[in-house]
Length: 172
Image (cartoon, rainbow, N blue to C red; front, side, top):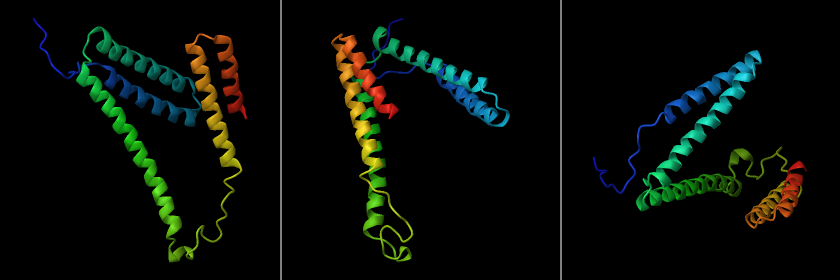
């Protein structure tokens, strides 16, 4: 029986979506048991099983793409387009938060006393904790990127130093 050529990847029936949905249900039930009866082992077992299921699922995806050759140009284009649309939806999601904040601050209502921030609300200084958190986040991102490039160059001792810098940033 010859394989019929198709531009798009037709997904075979796999057990992973059904098994992972039962795994998530098990995780929720185990967290409820953890809160009520303080039984922790079921939560850790269900987290381990979800990691195992995701590893097996991605193993099948990798086999379909490399070994079986199911991911042709159109499939790869569709996957890249899906990631691009996901990133754009996240950008629009956070843009709506910033837009609503700017709109609320620029056109404050009469119920708020036409003031921004409203009376009895005391804003924090953005040059203290938020600035420190931003500096920590950017410096740890830079040091872990530096570590990644050193690992690619096979300079493992230097990469351990940059990894230590990243861990030190997260401690503080």
